[in-house]
Length: 77
Image (cartoon, rainbow, N blue to C red):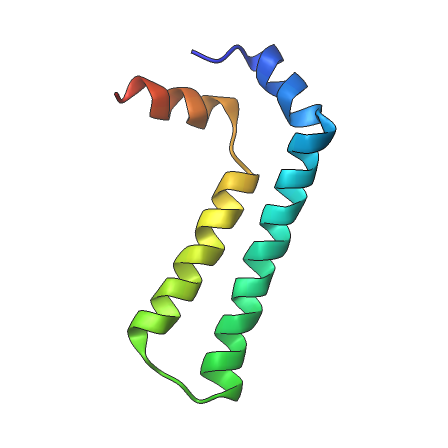
């Protein structure tokens, strides 16, 4: 189990902050790709669009991970 105070110290570390910021940028990049492929490119391949959306959602989820979500996932083992 991860202590909430330890988690906040980890989140405040410059490397953790940089990773979180990069994840947000990667998420937005995938959102932009989705728009370019579907809207601008006229591609409606559900596999491509689902992959881009899943990449967006995963990066956002990781960037917004909370100590409670982390502990819940660790306790499911």
